[in-house]
Length: 108
Image (cartoon, rainbow, N blue to C red):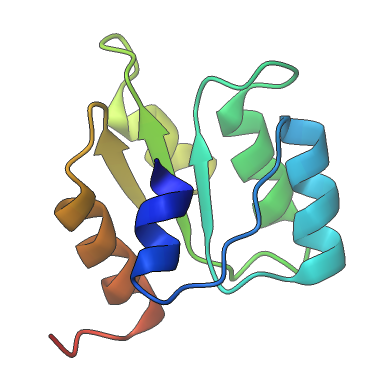
C-alpha cells in the first residue's frame, strides 16, 4: 500500500523484504529518504536506524519510522536516530506530508 501511494505521488520507491536487504539497498543505492517499520523480521527497526546513523556515508539520510506497537516509546525511536515517527494505521496524507517536509518539498 505504501509503495502504491508514494509511486502515485511521483516518488521512485525501492522496497526491501527484510531489514538486512534494506541495509544493503541503503548502502548500494543511497536513497533520498528511508521509511522503515520498527518491526522487521530479521533485525529490530531501531537497530537498522542506528546502523544507518553510525555510517558516515548514510548518517544524514532522513528516516521515518513506522510502528503499530503501542508499547514503543517515541523517545526510544528518536534516540535511535529517526527523524519522524508515524503510527499505524497510518494516514497516507500524514506520511506524504512527513516525506515532503524531510525532503524540503513543501510545495502543495
